[in-house]
Image 1: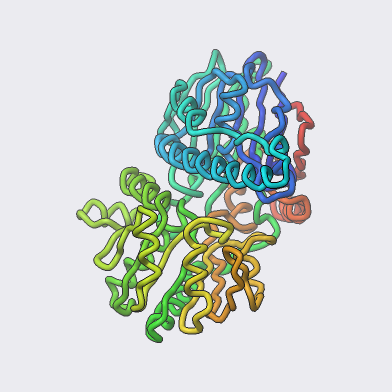
Image 2: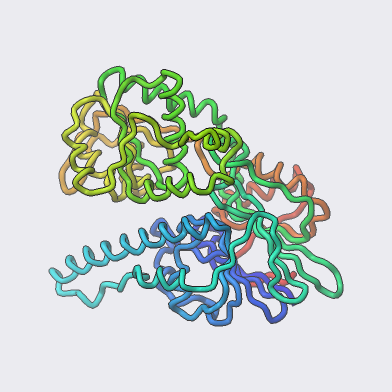
Length: 465
């Protein structure tokens, strides 16, 4: 018997975790963190399955909503093999170590506040520590190239295809025998758009019996990337021409590397007024080194540049500021500048002190290149609040605010439909990784475009194939 049960990313976009049972073998697809407040308490609760019975963990990519609970899984009894691409393994290590550091700092802050209230026992221990992360990478890993098959047991094989989402991202193909018939089950992971700046386009597949596909943007289409690039260039160059500073809150993985490449091109094409440029994120600096290491995942143009001895993510005016002291010294810079820092939603990290020192100045600009979730400081700025509280101080928001939405790492509705169109003889189509209202819209579009019914996965409810 073959069953699939979703324990995350079921009618929500975080906490990806899908348990596949094929006879006696148990395969877990991702083990991500629940994020965004609602449902995040699930991170600390016991798993709704037995980690010690899981034989294989397959990771689609290294975003925390797909890998963020792996240390907890290991701590709670998982002893099996971990399967991923080489790039995902190495990126996962820096992401999880950074996450463990943040969890510990949050624990210290919460404990301090609880002590003042006499409620120390109310504070939960960190979800995991750096030692827990190291235990993950002491496990047996199997790293695969795209479309390289790995035998799990007799008549069960797994392979990975390029999902085009971030470096090393993959969709998962599980081939197995049932009643002497060959079957294929596919998990899309997070699919990227074919119109990306630095990553190669997603691979396509021509056959699957069952498909579990993400639906993050199943209800809409993105605006053209070219339009967003022009908006970005204009926001940056116009601010610099007025001798202002450009502050870019950016996610360390993928978005930062895209911005560095854009600035590199502007610099080479004479579109960038002379300025100082700071990459002020230790995590982004580490991630960027891996982007240079794994050239095979980049698109043809960037591979050609690297083959010619050029670093696409570095150029003459760029400065890396790894240490806290280097970061703080940026506050004293008076000439025009560009500052790239995390977190991307301004809910922590070095971006906070840059906003404190520059948000008040009408010469400056804050350029948002990623979605701002409701309830974050970034969302408050985007929504036009006149006064923003940062480190307990009210800062008047006089800088110009730009929101550029075309850099999404997720495929939109049309792109998801086109990716599925190449799959022949699909028997079962299941929607995951999306909000329920978006899933329902997507299911309707799928029915109209592909003449196929969709099953919306629900948390903890097993689907028999």
